Image (cartoon, rainbow, N blue to C red):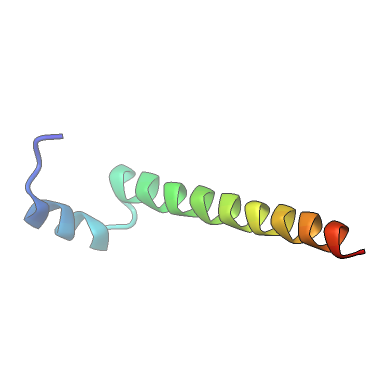
Length: 50
């Protein structure tokens, strides 16, 4: 990872490049994990309230 931030910025626009696609996939995985964590927290909280 010896790339400059300026070159990284240009890579963001090229979503069809492998690097851009990998970054997009990582964002998707992170979003899915956040949703799962939120659902689990909601289930635990509702279980305590009942």
